[in-house]
Length: 325
Image (cartoon, rainbow, N blue to C red; front, side):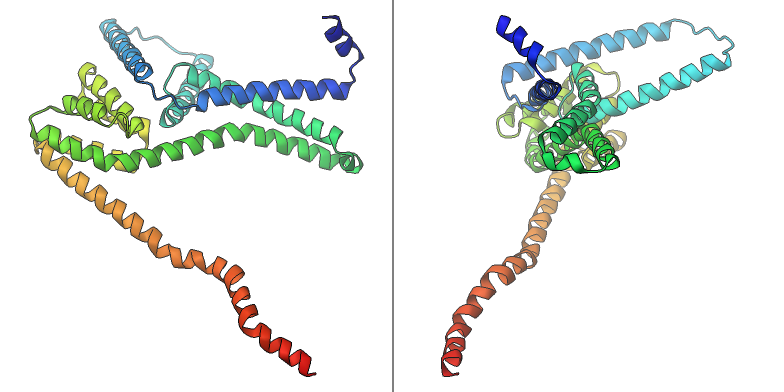
C-alpha cells in the first residue's frame, strides 16, 4: 500500500493520464466483450425464454388493468404539453435503440443501459486517447493548436460513433445468419404443418430441430412461439419477430402468414412456396458471386501474374539485345 501511495504521490500528470486512459479503455473493452460474446448454451436460452414469457404475461396484466380504469380528461398547460412531447420523443428514441439492439441479439433489459453507458463514455475515452497520443509522440508537440483541437474533436466523434458502428456490424452478421438459415427452417415448417401441427407448435418443433445448426433463428422461433401462446393477437407476435430480426426475408414470411390467416390458405402450401423462393434467391446470389469472380481476379492477374509472364517471355530477348550492343 505504501508503494502504491508513493507512486501516485510522485507520478506526473502524463503518467496519471496514461494510467487513467488504460483503465477506462480496459473497462470499456471488457463491457463490449461481455456484450458481444455469443453464448449458445441451452440452459441460458431456456432461461431467456422463461424470462421473456414472464415479462409478456406481466405486460398483458398491466395493459388489462390500465384499460379497466377510466381516463380523466383535464386541461393541459403549455409546459405540460412540452414535457409530454419531450417524454414521447425520448420514448420513441429509446424504443428505436432497443429495437436496434434486439436486431443484434441483445434483448435483455440491461442492454439499453449498457449501450447508453458505453455511448456516453466512449467520447471521453477518445479525448483521453488523443491526449495520450499527443504526450507520447514528440512530433505532435510542434503542430498548431487548431490541429490539436481538431484531433480532439475527431477522436471524440469517433468514440461517439464507434458503439453504433459495432452494433451495426453485429446486426449485419446476424441478418446474414438468419437469411442463410431460413430456407432450411421453412422446409421443416412444411413437414410440420403438413403433419397437422399448428403455427406455434411448428415454430417450437423447428426451433428444437435447428437449435445446434442455426441457433440465432432457433431463438427467434422459440420467442415467437412463446408470444403466440401469450399475446391475444397472433399478428402482434409475428410483427414482434419481424421487428426483432429486421430482415426482408422474414418480413415477407410474416406478410405471407398474415395473408394466409386472412384468406384461409393452407400453411403447408404457403411455407412450400416461400422455401422454394428463398432457395432460388440463394442460388441467384451464389451465381452473382460467381459471375463477379472474373472481374475480381483481373486486378491480381494484372499486378502479379502478367509482370512475371512478361519477364519470362521477354527477358531473354532483352538480354540478347543488350549483349549485342
